[in-house]
Image 1 (tube, rainbow, N blue to C red):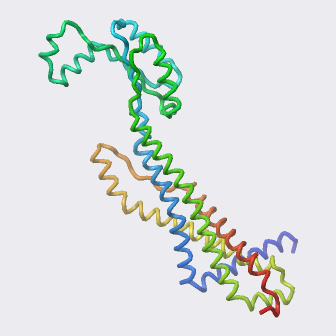
Image 2: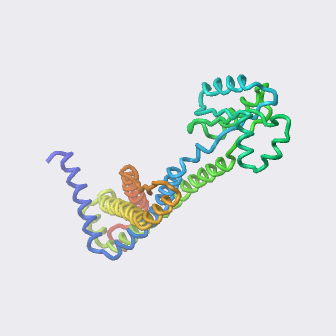
Image 3: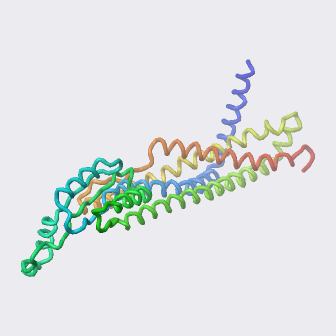
Length: 309
């Protein structure tokens, strides 16, 4: 057998041996996997929540706009020209011109002060431009840049940024994403600790077997290999459990979410983790399990030597 074949055979044997040890202790394996699965499910659940909120609201990018009130006396033709030039500016999705006549008609229809307005000699309302940015340019920096540009117009009397609450909402989502990253980091440390402690106990329970293996010439690397695969399998099963937890949770809450969306005239449907998230979850879980088992094995296997017990 070639060196490559021998190498693969040793690793395959270690993997099968590790799977066999897990299968022979189903209760302990289940408890460890469930704990790891719940730990991994929390950041995944937060990520799914943030993505669904962003999808449902589209970041409220359409609610962001800047209203430019022109000075009294600016001709409607000039207002139309300003609207046309603003539409051609990069980052601007739409510009709506509300003439003074249209504004007065809207105010008359909505305010109920029609008789009082008839007593006015002229129209006190100015022309106004409602500038809506593109979704990609609706971030605070681009919005402020656009506001400053509009405020430099000689014809501009006042420039109002509409949708400050949207900015605050997006800031809250950004904060939630940061919390997700922090929680994922701490929970990853927790997963490593759980696997490390489990492998430590496994090493202690198999101390006699390890001593015999070392007595016949087995190196620390050879003895360590099955424990590394055991940790990776714990992480892999924990990641799969986390995905199942999120899938079951979404299945339970999806009907209520759909009814809520329909009450607002929306066809929004909750989205769950896809193949990419599943791959990251399984790969990340296996990596964390491998790290935890390596740390435990590196520390405790070196202390076990034939006749040391």
